[in-house]
Amino acid sequence: MSTTQHTFIELKNVTKIYRTPAGDVPALKNINATFNKGEFVGIIGKSGAGKSTLVNMLTGVDGLTEGEIWIDGVNVHAQNQNQMALWRGKHIGVVYQSFELLNQLSLLDNVMLPMDFCGLWRPGKSQQRAMQLLEDVEIAEHAYKSPSRISGGQQQRVAIARALVNDPIVIVGDEPTGSLDSATSNTIINLFEGLVAQGRTVVMVTHDHSLEPRFTHLLHITDGEIVKDERREVVA
Image (cartoon, rainbow, N blue to C red; front, side, top):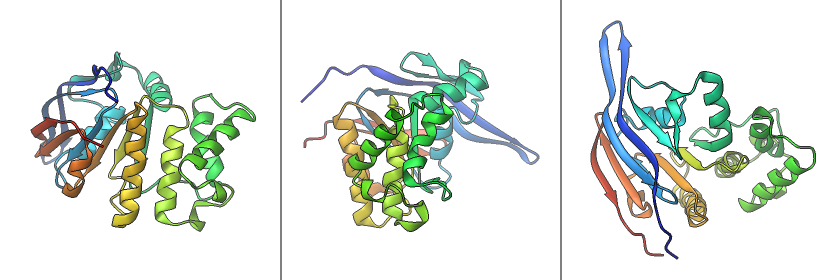
């Protein structure tokens, strides 16, 4: 099923320079790109190419040196820190390679945590939504276990459920399959593809070139610059 696409994310002359005692280190150099709503965007490059820096710019975790990033009509970096934190919590879901789950909490409580942080927690309804998401990623039977009692692939499923709990407009994966075996990695990519099929926008950073055919929009980054920007149809 095809849908009308429009520019949903726009990066305008995005530049990031880290100031160090040894001198300036350019991490991103005048990046310009647009992503459409409902795309599965792959950002590919070697270690040190600027992929993670770009994720930090996209999510507002780190500040720009120059340029602008617009997401769904919001100038991300024009917000103050408090506005940024609240906006990010409500609208951006991030899935990390290291999962970032809290072992002192159950899987269910880990998933509900972002709702609490953003003031969206509601007795009963929040737990119901979190459990539904755990069911969606096929991990609900472990809901009351701690993260340390399940496998890495299962933890990554929980991290995806947590990223979705506030119904974000963008899901960002920062090397989300980097520490997983190939079979589990494929399962995680399938989950992301399912989200894209639902109309969500997924932006995933990876160094794994074998994943290129899975993306509907592919960016290659080398030394902080886009060297390839390819949008294509992926036939199911």
